[in-house]
Image (cartoon, rainbow, N blue to C red; front, side, top):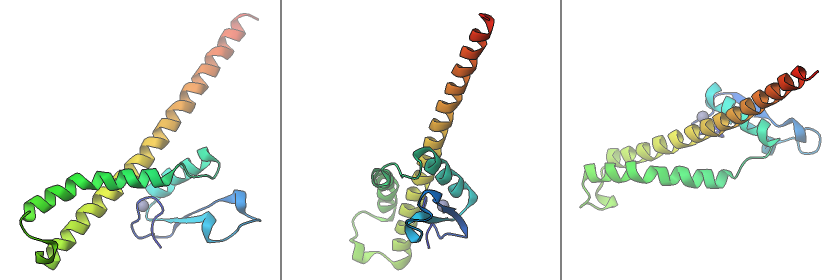
Amino acid sequence: MRCAVCYRQARGFGYFNARWRYSNAGQEDSWQFCSMRCQHVFSQLMNKTEGYMIDPTEMERAAMRACLKPLGERVAELGIDQTLADYHRDEVLQLIEVVITAYQHHMVAEHERLAEKERAYFEALREKRERAAAIGGLHR
Ligand SMILES: [Zn+2]
C-alpha cells in the first residue's frame, strides 16, 4: 500500500471518507499515508472538497514535469553520451531515486500549498465577518 499523497510506502496512517460509509464502503473511500504530514494535508484537502479530490491527474502531471530538470541534471552528470543499456545498475537506481524524490517533493509541497491557500482564504473571510460584526455593533 502506497501513501495517497507522495507514493512512499504507507505506514498505517489512514483516512476514511465518511460520506460514503453506507453506500460504498470499501477500498475506494479509504486511503493510507506514510506520515502524519501527508495524512494531515490530505484530510484538509478532503474536508474542503467535501470528499472529492481536486484534479489529482493534473497535479500528478505537474509532479512528473517537476522531475525533468533533476533527472536531466543527473543524466548529464553520469554522461549523456551513453545509452540507457550502458548504465550500471547503481546508476539506473540513482536516476529512479532522483525522479521519486522530485515527484514526492512536488506532491507534498503542492498539497501543503493548497492547504495554506485554503487556510488563508478562510482566515480572511473570518476577519471580514468580524469587522462587519464590529461595525454593526457600533451602530446599535
Ligand atoms: Zn506520504
